[in-house]
Image (cartoon, rainbow, N blue to C red; front, side, top):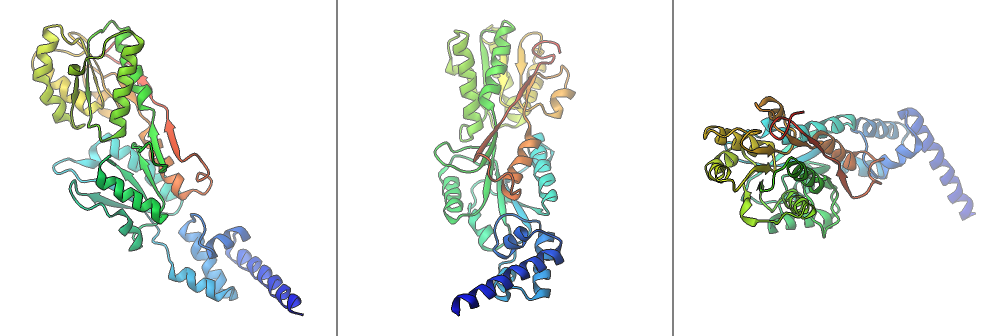
Length: 352
């Protein structure tokens, strides 16, 4: 008798789920995902299912739980706050944010931008605990103890997040990156094939994995061509135009004396700043020295002479990072994705 009683309620439950699905215009599987809070869903779909479930009176206890655990409908994007820097005018951030925004819109989410102070607390988990966000993407992540602790807490708590353009090799965090090792290798090989033998490298800070990747690519290219690595030819900027410009005085002396015949810069902003500083000292890229930048920003195509550079798919990286968090079909992908880059040869290292 008890078995029949249980079977009766099981049949009723199935029938009710079908009714909810029909009323909401979705599949039974979607109804189950909504009521069990499993996987990413568009907020519009979630609302339709909850309303339909309320109409037919399906599983009122589970329904009440869903209302109590309402999602924010926001995907958070954590950005570094840099005083006096117009962050959204930089090619890197604007392209990645545009890509994130496209996927978020498609999945029914809004963007919530969170600015991280350079020396401020990095309590990313609090954003989830206070229900401000349902998932987050971290841009400008650094390999420092405070960042490691904040990301470890997110992972331990089971909060969904993804890093863009930064990896922590020993941690299995979801990440989207570009193949900076090969991009740098190709850039330096191109300069060597052009006849350059003493190539200075203007890199970014090594707390960014992409800086370490570019340094490795630079070294690999030298080894392939039998050229000795000289640490004195490696300089560190902060990815700003100013840091490239400030290096011009020192490099001008080395170019004139023949110590340096080419420069590879880890991003276009530093490359353009350096080119401007060298031009003020009578040295023109593509003539007295060769130059290759990195990013393929708008500025690389506008400046004269046009800057040879490495194209990075930042827009696609942003789209993919958001899809890993919001698109159920993407979640089965590998934890870390590495997108290809492409060398763009222009006037500063040989005509197109």
